[in-house]
Picture 1 (tube, helix red, strand yellow):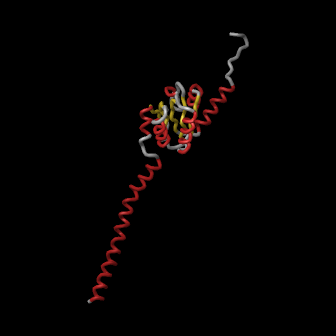
Picture 2: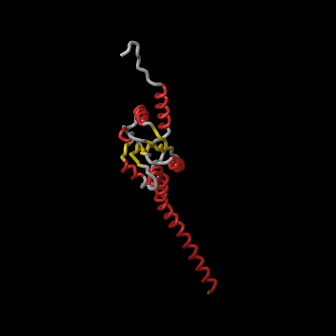
Length: 179
């Protein structure tokens, strides 16, 4: 080793990791893909579809992404950071994002590697299963309709009694008017 040599970290690499940390911090869920074989127009089309669901799609350098996830104290996703990697960043609900990616992969060579959703690491098969789940908004709507049905039935029952009484009184009044 040369005398006076100091190990210095390349400033550009530090900045690249910091930029990834900032990018990753804007998302809660991460879907890792292998984008080999996709054309530029296909990647643009995928980005457009993901933006419709509030997600972003970025090609990342594996080493920098691994360091960024470690510094952010996220679970280990090193298994999914090998080969050409692009990450879909979902801010809230990853189900519609994964669904859009699975639908897109039916006509293009996009492969899901795995996902980091709600702090848990999932393999490709488990990530694909997210595409079959209803979105968060759909689940809330289903829950609201289940909760609303008993209340509606109660209201109909309560309204039914006075309505029947009015109809009965009207029938009696009609009979007296005729007879």
